[in-house]
Image 1 (cartoon, rainbow, N blue to C red):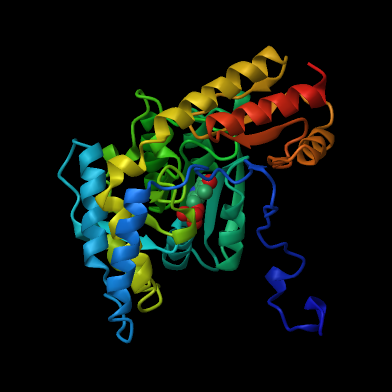
Image 2: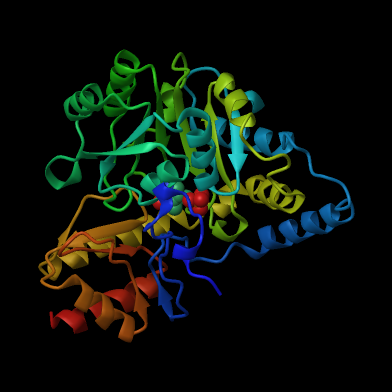
Length: 369
Ligand SMILES: *Cc1c(COP(=O)(O)O)cnc(C)c1O
C-alpha cells in the first residue's frame, strides 16, 4: 500500500486531516449532537412500507428533481413561518445531509479566487468544505462569550470582502443564538462589499426558544440569502442523510448546475417523505431534549462550571483545568462527549433523561463535586 505522500495529491490538500469525530461503541454517546431517541415505531413502519414500494422500481433512476420531497419540505417550513409568500418547490433544495447542500453552495458560489468567511469557533466543516473547492477560508472573531453583533459582522464583512458569509444559527460548537438583525447586517454588508451570498446554517433551529426566529422570515426580497436545515438533528434522522435549503428559485437553479444527476436515491427520497408525513410525531422529543439541555446548564453551574448560552441540543462549557483529562475520565465511565479543541472547555449533547442523569453523575464523580 502506498502512503498519501506517494500520491499526486492536490497541493492544497497536502497535510489536511479529514473530518473525524470518534465513532465509539459506548453506553452513553453524546458527542455529535444527534437526537439520541429512536424514531417512533409508527413512523418506522411507514418508512419501511415506502422503502418496500420504492424497491419495486429500483431498476429505474429516481426522480432527479425529487419534487414530492421538495413539496413535503416546503409544507413543513410553511407550517412554521407565516411571514412573506409561502415557499414552493422552486424555493427548496435537498441533498445527502446539509453538508452536501453546503458543498453545492461552495461549488456554485465559491471556487479559486473566491473566499468564504465564518465566525470562529464555528462548524468545523466550513473550512474543510471551502478547501475542497479551492475557496479561501477567512476566520473572523466572535465577541465576548462567543456572541455576535450586527456591528461586529458588518465591520468584518466590509474588511475582508468575502464572497460567501457563513452564519451558523444557533452556532455549533458554542450554542450561541443569532438575531435576525445580525443576518440583515451580514446581507447588507456583503451586498455593499462583493454582492456575495449569505448562508444561514440552521441545523439546530427546532431546538430554539420561543423568542428565536428563523432566517426564513428574511428570504423575501433577498435573493442571495440561503437558509440550510437538516433532518439529522431534531428529526432524529441522521442515518438517512437528508439536508435541505430554502432560498430564491434562482439559487436553486444555480445548485442544479453542480449536483450529480440523481444525487438523492429513491430510498432516501421515500424515507424522508415518510418522516415528513409524521413531522409532529418525529419532533415530539424536542421539548424534552430542550428540558435536558437546560437541566445540564443548571447542573454544570451547580458544579461551579461555566456553561455558555445555548439554543441548540448541546452545551459548551468552560471552567475545566484539563479538558482532555475530563474527556478521558468520562469515556472510562462509558460517557462519550466532545473536545472541540477550545482550551478548558468540552461540548456535550443533551440526550434522553436517563443519559443526562448518567452524564451528570459521571461528571460529578470525575470532578469530585
Ligand atoms: C450537524 C450539523 C449539520 C448537519 O449535517 P448533515 O450533513 O445534515 O448531517 C450542519 N451544520 C451544522 C452546524 C451541524 O452541526
